[in-house]
Length: 269
Ligand code: 6PG
Image (cartoon, rainbow, N blue to C red):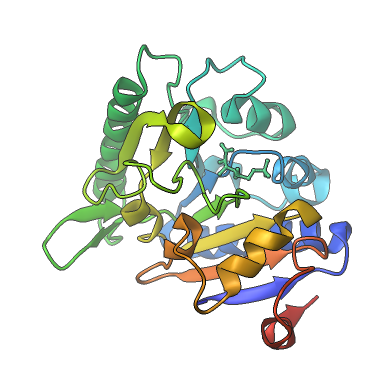
């Protein structure tokens, strides 16, 4: 597997390392370009990270006026629904920090269909990155592939890992996962028997940095499969930033079944 693998000795180290990574990426991006674009992951794993970032030590070291926050995916629920990734991040982080409300780019999952919501979010991203290019003319906010298709280059994308090998809402055997041209895909997902909206793989792989956060013994089997050289093709394995860095941060539980060679070559923190 490409990228760097970090094994945290306990939950405190896991969360502090994740928070420190956000801090460092944000400081570097703001210093270099004058802004920082952060994509939040959904699910339960990042909630404690979001709470930690709202703690005064981290909150006061982040330049919120220059930070813009997006989501990697969303369930097809309204923003006040208990399953909403937006609700989770708003309650644990965004409501507790001085981030301008106009810098929060929520996926409008309350729209009638996931396809409509995906189309709307796609337009939001297209407008944001076009404006970014105008406001910061010395910065190229896009990655252009070999056939001339441009994708947005987020500074940092946080991702989780599902036990079926999905990440964001890119699930096995799903049309959303194999979308190669759109920036945002939406539709019905068999694995969750529901509609989802997600950034597509080309967008994720255009990022400057991707950080996977995996915690808990329930992830140990899928983590072993992901890090097996000859393992089956899971969507999370397809995350390989073309011109960016990839970091996997695991806690003890998630790392439990790692092959010895992989464990040996990992960075233990
Ligand atoms: C979502 C996520 C999804 C999540 C994984 C892990 O909307 O559920 O974006 O990709 O990161 O399913 O979820 P947990 O952190 O809850 O295990």
